[in-house]
Image (cartoon, rainbow, N blue to C red; front, side, top):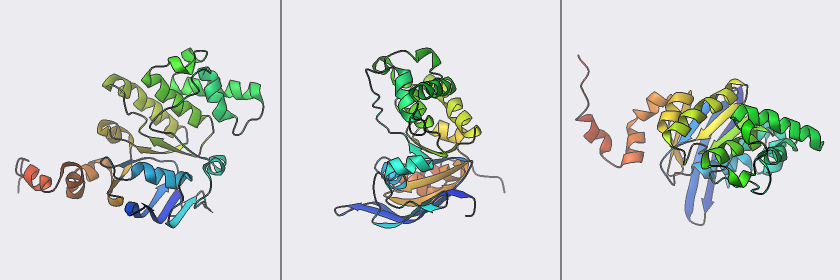
Length: 253
């Protein structure tokens, strides 16, 4: 795909005898907000690690912004413009929110004063301005999720990989975070998110890839993949799609 910002071609990774990711190929267009979903243990986070350089694939290629970055270390990928978040948020607890965000800003900014100023601008974008001088260790779970997002955003990414940024949030907090993620994409950052909160996926993602047992089994719009029998089987078990079909209203002839 000519306008793809990120392309995977036949990417595979095994740990011992376990194939965690098997022959995955996809093309992520620039300027989009997309999602990678699948049941627990499907290999989603491993695939993120392969994209971003935290793991090297056993086979296949990763191309980002026209460059083959297969096996390239994550700090170099970050300089090219690919940044990821992590499921488990680990801020520098004794430092302030401002100082935490400035760590990300320092990727492209050597001057301390300028990095702190950029941190304030990023905090405004994710709803953390009021907490800028608060120790990061005092933030709520929702606040820490916003901080993780802010630190990644401060690196000025072209592509932002969000690994379950909504996990652990209550419905109100999810509803408040969704427009923050949408605004980031609307601001020109390409976003690919791993997410289990399906309501958010339906509201945010234009395209969805579904991973199960390390393989891509479906792709399409959120509505298309949630109706796909293979996806239903992967989440709910063999035979479920047929059983559910008996209770669904039949379309008029």
